[in-house]
Each structure stands twice: as structure tokens, then as C-alpha cells.
Length: 448
Length: 154
Image (cartoon, rainbow over all chains, first blue to last red):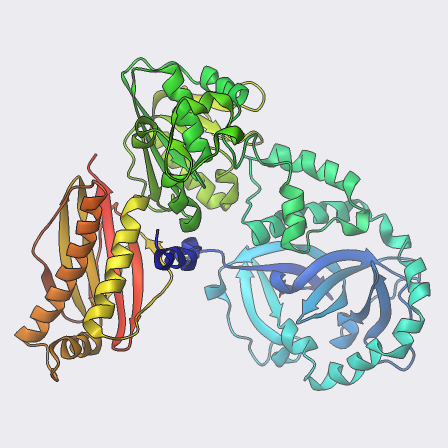
């Protein structure tokens, strides 16, 4: 491939983002209440949610500044939104915990006290109405818009405007907060921050909810019936690994760490002989001389080659056709000409390889049995009826609605008695499929 | 669309446009599209048949088409006359033919249909069930989108 072509591919790396769909949920907000009214803040501005109390008082600060707080070593200012908006606030006693939203505006983090944090709501940004001047107790310039969702009206606050350094009101106070006093009182704040470490019951569920949302935001991982079981087990495990104050996923690296145990065996490499045997022996026997396979989300193509070889070994005489596709242009364009070194591949593959100029590649018979396609499974899938569908760890990286659509396509494309191979930690959520594989080989046979 | 088909189209579009326009041509990000899409004003279409079925569509707005035709002919063309249409058709033919030649060398068998050109406002092209690869090209004359929809014969 020429250098020029290579950077074309680089440029086309994220083609899926260009998809257009009507009425899609493209705006997520964390909702909360202030004085009995519902409000929302764009989830991209919310770093995390927390329960905390006993803030360190800062003398001579604006009335709405409740103090500073040590959030794992970062000193952040705590703003009471109710005081800021002149709303009635019940004064809790000193030891009780307040519900906090930790917001991120540019590079600064702020803690914001609200009455109650509710949940994350996904809406279509097209449905957001501009604020009406007579609306609410809050200055209109701080309101991004109003949205209706399931019978409730949410006022979406404009966090940038509220906390922008240029803004008149908070601006005068905020920089002062980050100077001397905050730093000097930091040790005390650090000691206090131990107290709220044990978050109460309901907040734990909010944490799990928040992780679901951030997994999707960072890695487009959609928690649903497909992977709920794994998600719960992982959440329990996660609570053991991370400190209670450090549960939420704040950046992509956290999301990756959380997903570490999700991936199936032999992801990103050729399947080991025992895994390949486990999968193929679980698959129902095919009587016909021709075997059709669909492999959506094949990535770089390792699993496609692995299955092609495994099927070739099990059915030496059959005509095998695998339609492998992925929407990651960079990964899929390497797949047809993948080069290996024989020392690094499990032994049983070497018989199916030939030596080329740059190293070993799979032989003509294997390569001709696979069609690698640049294709988005959310568009129409033009594959013929197939005996097997190999789709490991792909469905989970779609939104719940898209997962449903893809499973619908599976039902349409799989022959009667055909089988689907899902990821090790994925479950078939539909009726009419029976699990046959053991352990890591998640094979489901179609019964209806 | 099969991975092997992508590069020949991208490369030949780039090479041919650069050569005939004698100018700096830039590629945008490639992406996939399934739904019907509006046509900017001038669309040249070349059909493909053989191992596959499909078509390649070259889409641009009218001022761009006129500027490209002017640049290719070395004279000022101000209306969408026969010469302008013939020039755009020829551009489509050159790019597709070069891509198909490259694919022949890789062992794929394609035949071309003669190009056809469509002009007008508010046009839309839809291909049911075929996903299209969009290759956007930025030229000094304006934006040209190359829309490749190919599928294997079942």
C-alpha cells in the first residue's frame, strides 16, 4: 500500500461517527432537583458524583461558596447552587453529607451542592427548547434550554456560563478561592475527606448507573441484557479494587481498566488450539457441502482467520465462505494481507500458511474463503443466509437500540439450526436460542 | 464493500484529479453511508458489472463543475453546455477506468457502463440495500464527492 493510501485510511478511521439517524439520543444529562424542581447538566461537564460534607469554610467568600473540599488531593471549591439561585435550602447539620456533582469546566473542577441527584437521562438535542424569559427562579442566561422527558420538564443549566471565568458574579470570588486560604487549610480538609468515604446505599446504585453511562461515553460500551451479568460481577469486583471514593470512571483509561476482564479469550491474536476446538466442537454439524459464516466486527481479522482454519480442519472438503466486516477502516484494511512470523503463531496454523516476501501469510485456500469488507452493521447487511455468525465482543459496543437491531438481523440471517458465537462474557438475550458451548465458548443454537 | 476495492478508487481519484487540474487536491475522511443522499447539482454516474454489481457516482455543485470543466479545457466555460457535460463525463470515466484497471491487476473482473450525467436541483439518489463509500475530495475548484456503492453478486 502506498504511503498516500495509508494516510487516506488514517483519515477515515472513524467513519461510524458520520452516521445519521433521525430522533437519536445525542444529549445526555445528569438530572437533579433544586427546591423541588428538576434540572439537568450536560453529562460531558460532569466529572463525577459524590456525597460529602464538612467542607472547610473559607472566610470572606461569597455566600454561595460553602467552602473547599479535598477530592483525592485536589482542592475544589464547593458551590451551593440553591444559595446561588436564591432558592430555599434546608440546612443540614454539620456532619451530614450533601449530594455533590463534581463539574469540569475547562480545566477547573467545582463541586456543586444540590438537593438530590436523580439519574442520567438521554434525550435528543433537537428537542431542547430555548429558555423562556419568565421561566424559573434562575437568571435566563444560565439556562441552556428546557426539555421534556417522560412527563417531566428539565431545566438544562449552562455550566460554562455559570462558572466561566469571565462571568461577573462568580468570577470575583472564584480566583480568590484558589489562592492562599484554600491551600493552607488543605490538611484539615484531607482529614475530613475520609469521613464520606463510605457512601450510603442509594449512592452505590447511582455509582453503578454512572459507570454504565461513562462506559458508553468513553468506549461506546452499552450495558444491556447481553452483558448485564458480567457488568454486575465486574462492579462487585471493581468495588474491591478501587477505593470507594474512586469508583467512577473519569477518563478513557479508567473505562479501559474497567473493561479489562470483558474481552473474550484470544482477542487480538490467533485462537489457541484448545479454544478453537472448544468453539468448533460446540457448533452444530453442517451436513451441506458449503458453509457460510458472517463475522461482524472482525477487527483486524485474527478471529476470522482462526475460525477459517478451524472450520477447514473440521470440514476439509467443504466450501467455506466467511463474510467478515468491520467499520474501523484502519483495522480492516490490514486484514486481507496480514503477515505472521511462524514462531509467534500456535503450531496448528503453520500448515495453512505460505512464506511470502515479508513473512508468512495464510495460504490461498484460506484467504479466498474470506471476504473482508469495510461495512457498518447498522446499515443493511447484504450477507446471504448463514450457518454460523461469529460476533464476539461486538454487540456490547453498540447502544441498546442498535443491539436490538443487530440481533434482529442475526435472526433474519441465521439458517434454521444455525449458531451464533458471542463473546465469553456475553449472553444471548433473545428467546429461541439455546446455549450449547461450555465455558469461554459462548455458542447459541437457533431453535425457533 | 470489500477492503480490496477501496484503495484503487481512492488512489485513482486522487491521481487523475491532480493530473487534470494541475493543482493541489486533498482527500477528506472516508465514511460509509446507507441512506439516500442529496446530489449537489451535477452527478456523473458510471455503472459497474462483472464479479460485482454497483455504481460510482461523482457528485459536485454546478459552480464546481463549471470550474473543473474550465480548468480541464483551458478556457472559460460559463454555462452547463455540451462541452461542460462531456468534460465532467470524461473525468468520471477516467477515474473509474483507472480504478478498474488497478482492480484487474489484482485479479478482479469488472466492466464499466458508459457514464451518464445528471444535472438539476434538489435531486436525491437512493440505493436500497447497498452501502456507499464516500470519498470526499477538496480541489481548488470546489468539493467533489465520489460515492462508490458495490456489492458482490450473491
